[in-house]
Amino acid sequence: MILTITLNPSVDINYKMDYFSLDKVNRVNTAGKTAGGKGLNVAHVLRQLEEETAASGFLGGSLGEFIRKEINKKGIRNFFVEIGGDTRNCIAIIHEGKQTEILEDGPDISEKESNEFLKQYSEAVQQSNYITISGSTPQGINDEYYSDLIDIAHQFQKPVLLDTKGSLLKATLRGNNKPFLIKPNQDELGDLFGKRLTSEKEIFSTLQKDLFQGVEWVVVTLGGNGAIVKHNENIYRVQIPKVKVVNPVGSGDSVIAGFAAGLSRGLKEDELIKFGLAMGTLNALEEQTGSVDVTKITWCVDSIKVEKIEELAV
Image 1 (cartoon, rainbow, N blue to C red):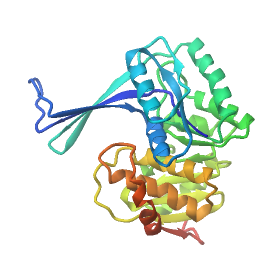
Image 2 (image 1 turned 90 degrees about the vertical axis):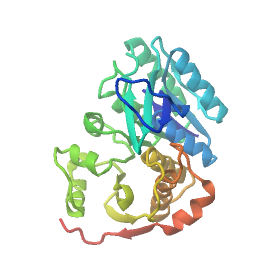
Image 3 (image 1 turned 180 degrees about the horizontal axis):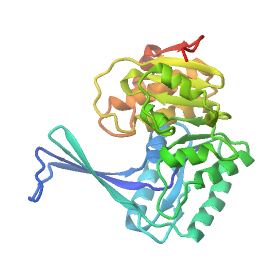
């Protein structure tokens, strides 16, 4: 089983309209509501890949109940912890080729609720083979909390795939135990060191930093330009097929799902890299976030090129 963690999930509301005007009444052409959050996107893709999947985090109020019902429909095991606060809404207004987002902060987690989650998480980890941790933390949870989750997983020798950024990622990488895999994009990698990375040479150099010691996989996604992947001491350049992008939102989450599923299936090196990156590409072809067409997997995997960099220009 693959356990996905979304500490700050949301009900994602999409409003589609021809025009959006400030300070006026706007009528919505179509609206949709889904169980959202980066970790839940991971879980959705894993279920499409027919992996046994569980989801956990904090849920509260009627919106939390909505998410519980949605994941149950999709066959995702529910390990969420009930809280006194209300799960948040996240609104996306899609208009005139643009997307305007309105994101709530989410609930404030009490110390009691935080400790209860750690207890239940420890039990869930023991039933899992891999754990994915994605996104931000809600109010009341500090930057060291992900390190606590990784420490618990390490205690039971369960690898953690981590997808977060900024101070939260930096604090986690400075913890006693490292995640098995991290997936920063090019900007997020540079942000860790307060600089903008503009070339492969700069990416290669940054991946040699001590901060990444002990992290077995570092997957640096480059959007339509593929990825730079570091596995232990090896570095790979990955080229993905050129496609007509429909919706890139959730592609990073889909990459995490692809690597988790690939690891669960015993894929190694090139095969694992191709499978992981293929899921991100396939997600970009779909209108719905966190969705892949499984009939296109073979085509996409076969279209990805992985080149080992023998000599680093650093």
